[in-house]
Amino acid sequence: MLGENFLLQLSARMVRMVSRLSSPIFLKTRAILFRFLFLPVCIQFAIYVSAGKAQNGSQLSLDVAQYQDKDHRSYMDVYYSVPRSSVGYALAKGGGYSCQLLFRLQIYHEGGLWASKMWKVEETIADSAHLQTANQLVDLIRYQTDAAGHYRVVLHIQDLHRSSHGDSVSVEVDLRQFSPDEVEMSDLQLASTITSAAGSPTIFTKQVYEVIPNVAALFGESAVDLYYYFEAYHLLKNISSRKYKTVSYVEGTAGKAGEELSASHIKQKRFDSIVEVGRMNVSRLPTGSYRLVAGIADSAGTMITSREKKFFVYNPAVTEELAAGRRGAGSTAVGPLQTLSEKELDDEFDRMIYVASRAERDMYKSLKSAEAKREFVSSLWQSPRNGDALNGLAYREQYLARARETETRFKSPARPGWKSDRGRVFILYGPADRLDRFPSSTTSLPYETWTYDHLKGQGGVVFIFADRMGFNNYEQVHSTLQGELQDPSWQQLITRGSSGENRINELQ
Image 1: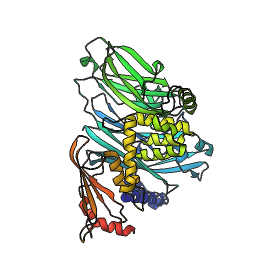
Image 2: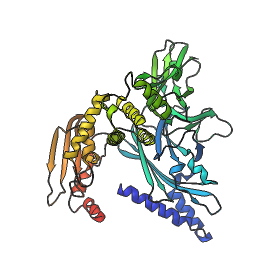
Image 3: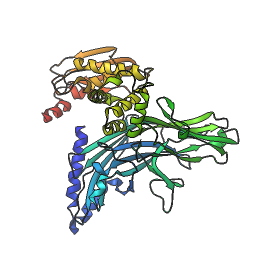
Image 4: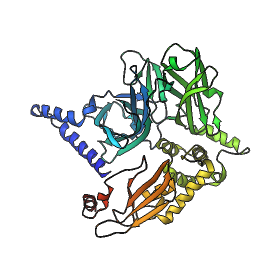
């Protein structure tokens, strides 16, 4: 993390320094420097106005979707958005207000760095009143992907007008190998608007539509229309009948949301690939987490292939009305959630940081009443939060019980036990099958190894925690579990006199 922040700060300083080189003798030098520092600056950047209300505290949003082009090559779109309300705008020399944002994108494939780029975005607006709206800076970057497998996409942002304001977000995705012997689907893309493409294509043009992504997947209040887009491939060979159906529906914690939030269209089998777009009005949905499911079915309605996408609805008025009506028949805020105060709900949601997505955390911050928070937390626990058989109240009880246990097991002067690295692993995966402690020695910093015999389908999973800073503040330095921090050279970090310890000494 230290290296990432240093690189962003260094790059920001270089941007300011190079921007001052305006005399003719430096123009060529400046052009060369910008070319290497911000190679992707040629990416076409567009600004679109979202229909929704900006949520307080929301920052950088990121999403990934996989498609297939006309030559049957797989590619992925990386979408990101930033609310203008979170960006620092300064008075521009020529009038108006300008912002300067520095982005860095890193994509890892099966643990190794697969792609990396850095670029700068500048924008000038005429009136500061626009900063109070829900305007979003929205962009996408496209990559051809020849290899299937696990990808991790990490995006960093640095506000050059406010050096202390930075953000980062990551998404993990398993990309597929589209088979010509099966009906295949792209990922579902949620959108703020979808219109017929007119004029010259933009970066958001797909087939004959211009699809403006809703990267945060937040709907409700004024953003009542949820648009969606997907593609389907290899239909002619793999659908036996002359007709088939495209199907879509919204599903909540209690099943399908209602007939008005479902659609089924009969199609004649004439093309090998199709594009499907749709719109659903979510104004009647109470605040909570939902899934959009869409796919291709045979003529009898049996689903052949489908994809799903989680989204979030913030409708405080609907939530309060439904909550009042449910009290006599049993609220969705089941069990002890009914008796929790707003402060207790806030504390519980704080501890859900390891299972709540960024968009869910942003939405919770926007809720204004205890009843709305209670409904929302209840909906989160009732939706799948983990990979085992426990769900709902059973998983909630296990999760919170582990969080309470970390308060005594892993408490340190630096942070409460549940916020520590060991606390996070304990909460998510439970106690290790074997724990080995290695005290401080003349050659090594103190560290622990946790071994799980079976975890997420992997055997012999190991976590390594080291007390690199002292004060019983053990940090995770390595794990063999897929998706966790992995550093094969972790032993260098705990060896006394190594570069790892030297880096720590520099910070003290």
